Amino acid sequence: MFLSSRAIVLSKVRHTDSTFIATLYTEQAGSVAFAVRIPKTSRATIKPQLFQPLTLLTIEWDNREQQSLQRLRNAHLLAPYTTLHTHPHKAAVSAFLAETLYHALHQENNGNIFSFIHHSLLWYDCPEGCFVSKSGYVVPKSGNVDNFPLIFLAQLTDHLGIGISAANGAPLPYFDLIEGEYTPTQPPHLYYLYGRDALFVHTLRRIAYPTLHLLRLTPAEQHRALRAIVAYYRIHIPDFPKLRSLDILRDLLS
Picture 1 (tube, rainbow, N blue to C red):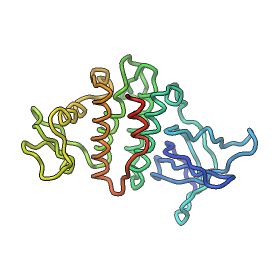
Picture 2: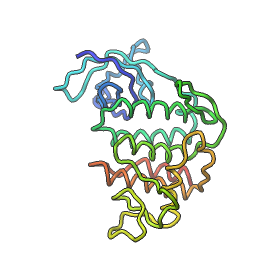
Picture 3: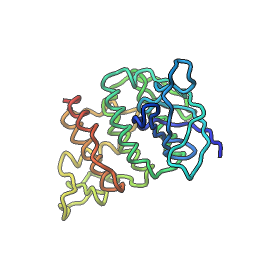
Picture 4: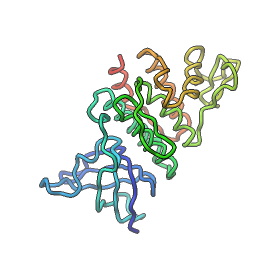
């Protein structure tokens, strides 16, 4: 069956001397792995440069459900980025988010998830941060966007059906990572947050992209919050592994 779709690049690995495997999250079919031939000339229609982490594409392919690897017919940039692949900090964040999404979305096929990720990446790409209006236009907005991955991953839990519950009033002292909610007493296991770390969850659930610049965290606090969210993903998503890019991002933040 011939399909055309918007897509987001999640990973790219060498397969043979002449091909690489690109895993894309598509709006029409969820996560799809493609065997892509490495071109021998610059005139090739599908260029390897298109498959950097989180690149937004429009693609066409003949979908054969009995095959684990599909073949691309066409691939074109959907929305070229301004800073996502050129700014050192954003490039590291992009690699981390791409690895996270690769493992979080392998069983998902939801157009709403695609739209959320698509709009979020366009927002993050703006040099000073942006706001995506109701009409879909990207409107520049000044402010610090260093904490974008925290807000993005917290909001993504809602789209994955594993939403993190915010406190209705003042947050209780413990946040249970297994139950995804606050509790007044220490949970009978090791997977919980306490004190200021638990308060991070409440703060993340109350901040949206346009007010992201109001969130002030030290690099150490950023990393602890990221580790907590990744731990939540590992608990609630089957076979979610330890992320290699998280340590790289930690080194960059420090």
